[in-house]
Image 1 (cartoon, helix red, strand yellow):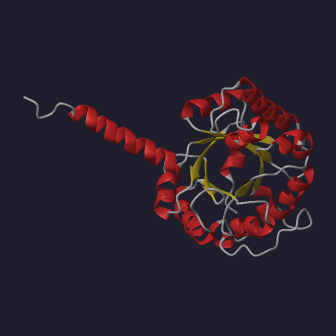
Image 2 (tube, one colour):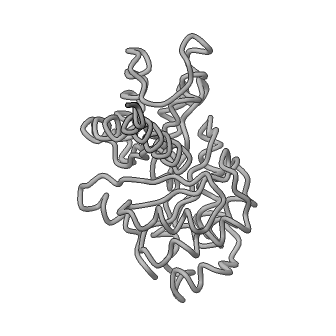
Image 3 (cartoon, one colour):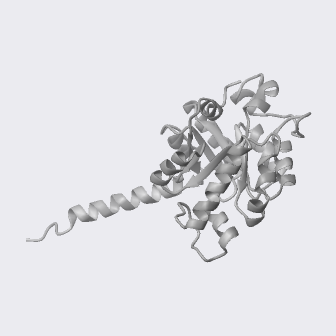
Length: 263
């Protein structure tokens, strides 16, 4: 079976840089996968992506060697198992609020006797290798999102769940969960109470011997998060990168041509 390069990076003591796909397009996925990320996540929760298109995006990324991950829409065995069968090397699951939720998540990712995943890796048999059934449990990454007040309160129990590889912080929902609407939603939090909460999640995960991952809005904040000790950082997404590059191109052109034609 083709090894999971994110796990290799972690075992070597490094941090992984993760890209994010919200546009349902294999060509966009292919372009992003060729830019040097350690992993790329297809977003089935908030992204404009369905299962069939996600499968073609996984196919488009294969040649690059990047590790493909999927954020599933919810804690649902159908979505989780189908994402893995399509060739994802791990799942990020939103709204994991309790130890019981985390146990269910792990069970959907692992085959018996560890879990309850049904065997039928339709594409993964070809994309990952013929020995997939024997090796998959060791190569799949299982990440629970911590993004609510309930999850934060149950953090110590969640991170102690056997088989859970790590937690993934969604700062926008975490902000809503912990502070309501006192602060605007978004990434790259600077408010002391939110920075403290993010640090608590990081420390609690590491104390339990699992990984901590953070969604970021900018390279500068992602680099800072790696300095704090995060094991995986997501840097922006395809939508934001396209919008920012397009805006910069237009603004630069307007600036350079301002006054052109004036006598």
